[in-house]
Length: 222
Ligand SMILES: O=C(O)c1ccccc1NCC(=O)[C@H](O)[C@H](O)COP(=O)(O)O
Image (cartoon, rainbow, N blue to C red; front, side, top):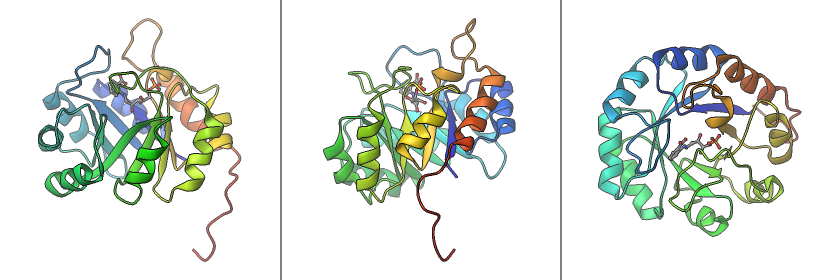
């Protein structure tokens, strides 16, 4: 069953709606040096994350300018996992994971297949996204899902598919890529208030993702 991360939450109401929609993970964008309607201060992210019930993974999403900055975000937000954007290598990820004591998800551009291989077995998950030149997400742009499926087939590290997903296209995306999880931010937002989530769209996204016909054979023996 594909998992769903609902990202860029900024209010208690949106957090509750994401949990009610069945999110497996919720993301809080914080300490990013780009213009986005989804950013919240680390302390706000910590308050929102603290409101999330058990069995829903909290993710601090950030563009740190150093390993130390990544660890600091984790120390301030207290998430279950941190999602880092930027040019971090395997040793950086190891150090962040050890010092922060949280899972580390590395965001990669859809064309960064070499980096994916380097991070194989080091990152806890690889989030393959349509990123900007500043390594930012939230673009609302899709990428070549066939290529990402090929990447997923080459990896044992869980692959999270992101970039331009919506309730309307997520089923096709899951059936094409067969990712460990899908992730969405702008594709489930209100038209009249960027950054605020459309609660019906949150529920539809999770429902459509889970309705996808799974292509991978069920794990044997468990
Ligand atoms: O969402 C943002 O505005 C953002 C800004 C800077 C760094 C990361 C950001 N989002 C990261 C995410 O995990 C998004 O959910 C992902 O990029 C997908 O976004 P979208 O294409 O809008 O669904």
